[in-house]
Length: 263
Ligand SMILES: Nc1ncnc2c1ncn2[C@@H]1O[C@H](COP(=O)(O)OP(=O)(O)OP(=O)(O)O)[C@@H](O)[C@H]1O
Image 1 (cartoon, rainbow, N blue to C red):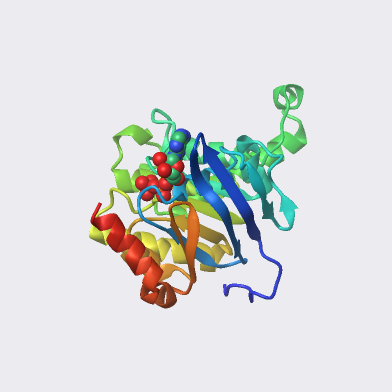
Image 2: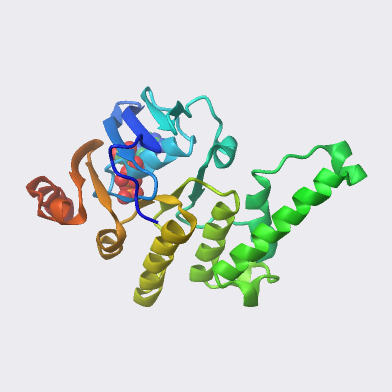
């Protein structure tokens, strides 16, 4: 799938977001837009505000001012657990799965984010509950195949290699059928080959499933090779936005990273 032209309304819009922790201004009026089918890389030196922004997008933090809009509607009244149903899914930096549960059941948890149920309907196994369960089973099976998790589907998560657990986490986020997928440092802890596979996977998720991706990542090779657009933060401000080539040549970006290295 091709990214929509930037003249179309944005799927996700970050408008002048400010976050303060005591005297620290972690985000100082951040604004950018993400269009359907784009892969956006959010980068910046340590302490730039990437995680803080990510936590605003998944509603773990509430900005002091500014707004976040999904398909034109503010999400600030939503709670974190409501976000998958809104259409914004996320993965966590350090993998946040149910360790003793199987791969299949972890993915099932993600699929249930979009399903409705209540005690009596469940207990009576009403036809719509059975139909919904069949749909969840089909979604989970399709994702197990899509993410090549078939050989480990019924194993508990805690014994699996880190790279596999990261794929399970992506599968769980996809199970809620997000319009936008937020990936928090997905390359962290992966080896060179695994990073290459991850980059192809993220592009496939965009191309095959039409999912828009916002990627917070320190791995420059990954960000620059797959992003349509890169937003650069430094000390809570947006210092650059553009294509990977534009951003890499931007003197402010080069200075921010060199400054970070000499600290
Ligand atoms: N919960 C918090 N309480 C106080 N200050 C915080 C909190 N979270 C972040 N900060 C501060 O806000 C600023 C932005 O931090 P943030 O973690 O968002 O940066 P980052 O770009 O994600 O950094 P890194 O790449 O190291 O993860 C930093 O100065 C940080 O110390």
